[in-house]
Length: 212
Ligand code: B1M
Image (cartoon, rainbow, N blue to C red):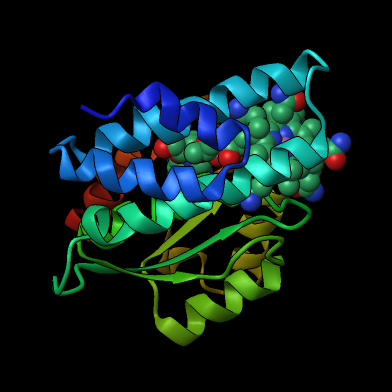
């Protein structure tokens, strides 16, 4: 049986080939994709965050680890996202302006796709105007924003303001998340929902479309 702690260590050391090999092996061993994700890939990021906070690792270490995590995520995506499901709603997704963290946002996108949502992923460092334009273009029912920095969280409010100014606030539900984001913060900025993780994001998005 594949040792998922070895997978975590390979992510931490940025060993892309071993990450691919162990991810594939774990799936062949019958380990659920969600366990490979949580216990192998996300676990590594938690360790990395602690080490970065303690000054034991630096930005380049985080970059190589993130690249290795992407390699594993790419292999899990087809399984986590499922296939050929009719869209149950349209989502415009992005990491807010000034923020380039995308692993959590990508997971949210994958899970939403897996739950049957059509997801327009605008990427990272997304301007408020881009959110508004794509809501209009796609006729989206949900705007989903991710922020990983305390300094970029306020951008979420700026996006909500832009949706109001653009006359589309009433047509969408706004979902926010990311490690520094809390339910209270979400309420304070006028978002419609908050989720602590990608699974929660799907649950909230389902509630949104059920209510329309
Ligand atoms: Co950065 N970074 N980083 N970083 N980085 C953090 C976030 C930090 C907590 C590290 C630390 O200090 N311990 C810290 C933020 C401190 C703060 O603001 N309080 C930090 C910092 C300071 C920075 C820089 C400022 C460092 C510098 O330049 N001095 C810089 C900022 C760059 C920028 O954005 N402008 C920076 C840069 C980077 C890298 C580019 C090197 C890299 C990102 C690579 C990439 O994403 N492609 C990076 C990384 C990897 C991290 C850590 C180590 C890991 C983040 C991650 O991917 N986690 C992180 C420490 C940590 O979080 N442990 C850290 C795994 C991911 C699956 O989890 O994104 O939290 P997460 O997503 C979760 C939930 O939050 C939730 O669901 C996901 C799980 O299911 N979620 C949502 C996320 N979005 C959601 C949206 C939803 C719902 C749920 O609804 C729409």
